[in-house]
Length: 215
Image 1 (spheres, one colour):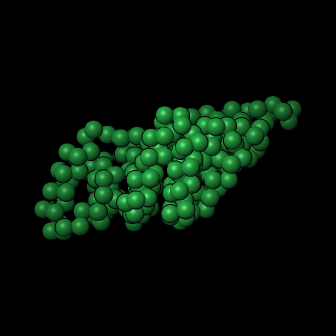
Image 2 (image 1 turned 90 degrees about the vertical axis):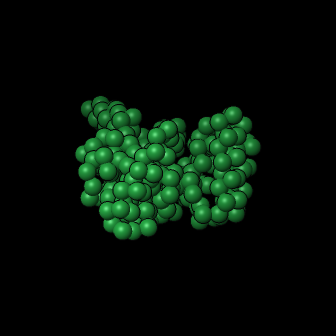
């Protein structure tokens, strides 16, 4: 449900754009970065993911999702950051501005204001998955697990690769004391992003608990 950033994105992206244009004679850095993410050296793959964090759109999502399994940990981290950035772009400036307002409100723990802002985002762009995901996060912080779970499921329906919503749904099921369903969601999240250590620990703990209960 959360997003991180990097202070070096601008420099890396600029260097990558120059390298791709001179190497391939192309002025489409997005498609070239997507290609380089799949075929480049580890440093090139990292830079490609950083560039896609800045300019990527939904066309980059499959390659970024595949990069979550990259052998290079820094590539995986960059791909995860890039996916969050892409998912936060609706393509409609007013929607993105309202989403940002909601995020700020949530960071201030003004959860009712945040849910109202995210509801406005959903009304403005009902097919924009991140509106539901962010409202799910606000509901979760309010410990309204059923409402949060409903919005997680809406997010997943719109974006099946959204490991944040999948893991968030698992957390909601934990809050509702439904361990088998929590395990199901966590395993689905790991199927998309297998290197989420906290989710791995939840899976191990739930499996151990369920085994102990069956003895």
